[in-house]
Length: 254
Image (cartoon, rainbow, N blue to C red; front, side, top):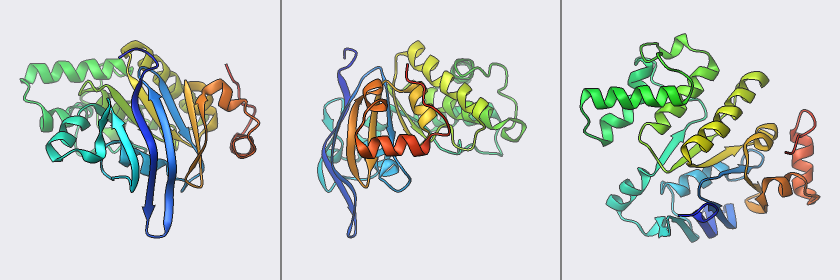
């Protein structure tokens, strides 16, 4: 698949919960090998979007396509196979505090692959090195800083060698300096590994730092989607209001 070809597509996706239409006729083509950031205020459908991408929810209308295959039409076996194409960095890191860092990173390997101990150790060491934490496999999560725990979460997302990594609010709860370091890590890792990143956030400074493509959700509707520079500079009234009010300072568009 060539750069800029859509690896993930949403085609007219609508999702309701009761009378509430959480996503309303959303269409996006997310390019392979780039970072797409979906922004918007809380409660506007960003988390629902993630669940649709991995088949935890099915759309009420429209289609979600991964590699051209309709996720909503997949049976359980096909879904499990498709999900192995994804890695996931959860908002709080979702680390197991009773396990070491290495055991946390190795957790998905235990459940999905049959590797020798040496192969597993090598995968874990490689993933930790990729996120800047070499040699920390024996540490416990409570011995790490918030930024380090996020890095461990990313190492666990990378250890299965996915094509696509989903990030749920990767800078949530971090101070500005640590947030900037995580942004740099996202940019560097995507470039080095050539993966497709999909980031859900309301952090507009982070969005400006990491995005190749930006989609803006508001009240379930996709207000604007396109190259990051175009969206961040847009005078679309809803988009402009969100970025101006959500930022704590001027947004630097590169």
